[in-house]
Amino acid sequence: MARLRFSFGTMGSGKSTLALQIHHNLASRGLKGLLCSQLDRADGKVSSALGVSADAVEVGPKLNLYELALAMRERHGHLDYMVCDEAQFYLIEQVDQLARIVDELGADVYAFGLLTSFQGLLFDGTRRLLELADESVEVQVEARCWCGSQATHNARLVDGVQVYDGELFVVDDPENHQVTYDLRCRRHWVSGDSGNTETDRAIRSILAEQAG
Image 1 (cartoon, rainbow, N blue to C red):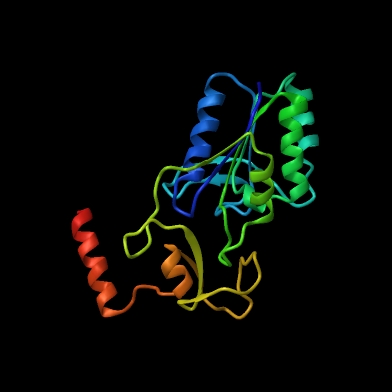
Image 2: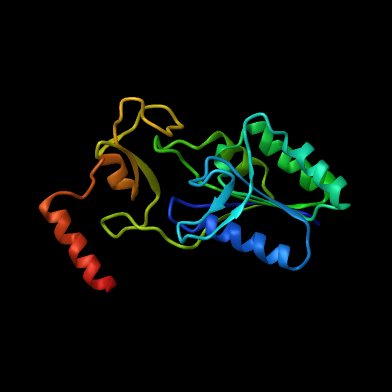
């Protein structure tokens, strides 16, 4: 029986790497599938921070994923699976379409995404996936905050200062501010602490020595 599986984690937890691995493994067995993404670091691809990538369907807000799956099935005679990276950015109706693909077309769907935005709130796509998925699992590659604790939140920094307000999707800042993202534990996400004090730098140094 086909299933909708949602795998979630913070930035740097290996979601895209796992998505690429699943797609490769299934395709190498001769199964027919689709690899999809949205707002990836490389347009038209799913790309891992490890440097691995593969061509993918770019999911824009007007794309009907159910119709895409139907077209794929008509072209190849069947559709076995879909792998959907950056699924937190999908619209609610697109997540509903993924559920239809599972239930009506009998294809497995593997969705990957973040739980919360830099504001600490669930993405709309993530919320819907948690509501509909047959299985929701956390990616087990643990990302770490600068203090060494497990990272639970994604922080947005503007010119090095953490912000909690602003547009959800930022590609290029119109005022040429430097926009970056960092991983934080809940404590340091709430406090906005970037670990740049003398004590914090000492902690970083100790952690680096232990890791080495």
